[in-house]
Amino acid sequence: MDIVVCIKQVPNTTQVKINPETNTLMREGVECVINPFDTYAIEEGIRLREKMGGKVTVLTMGPPQAEEALREAIALGCDDAVLLTDRKFAGSDTWATSYVLSRAIKKIGKFDIVICGKQASDGDTAQVGPGISTHLDIPQVTYVKKVESIDKNNARVERMTEEGFEIIDTPLPCVFTVVKEINEPRLPSLKGKMRAKKAEIAKWNAENLNCDFDKIGLDGSPTRVVKIFTPPPRQGGVMLTGDVSDIVDKLVSELKNEF
Image 1: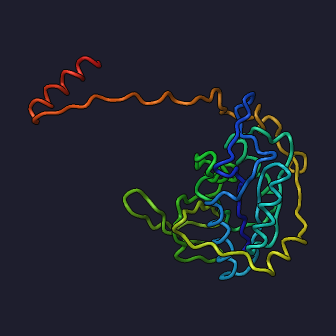
Image 2: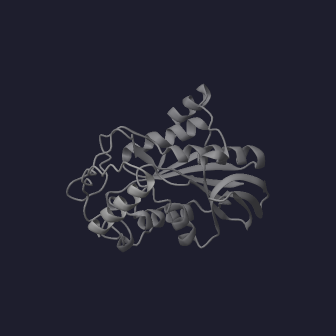
Image 3: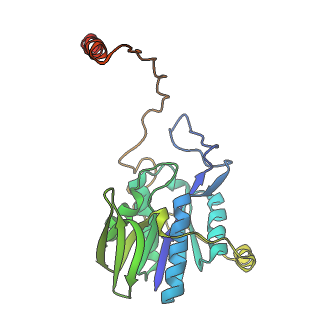
């Protein structure tokens, strides 16, 4: 079974910086980590390979420093890694990012499952996984909390919902986005760390992927951040005291004055 795991290197939560000119995240020179939800995607990909055989290829789009995240994924047990890095990718929104990732997956060729974390900690949109599914024109199952059964043609998974869960049967290839309830990520082994240190990381740019330049980067993104501001501090409210009937009368009066 050939599995592709898409990960993202995100700024450490205490180190988020915004470019004031483009209103995009500044990643160069900022301490970064693998997006926490993506560690569960990595673990699930490795577990499926251990069960079914095959290989796990880990994929990320980002600046050259994102290679560190790929080496960490290899140390955890992934087989191959590809870094998508190009100045032309800078400023891509979720749609443009999922387009680039889908182009890379097509270039990889054979795949049965694409696994992503449910969302990234810096954007919290949960849109890239579904975007990949759309660009590849394959099924998707989001918020997967358990893979109940799988073979080379089909999978049955448990999908988390607000009310409980759903059992979904899907043909392969398919995109899964996973939640943290799906597993417990492992720690890298010494052997894995040594292998990661020596691993060759493939690096692909926009030309390698035959990208349509009108669909990538800031100019190719259908959405963008126009303005960033800090909300004004919340003003103090009105304290109402007395018995219930008095409080109700006062509350009605305050609401009338407000509106």
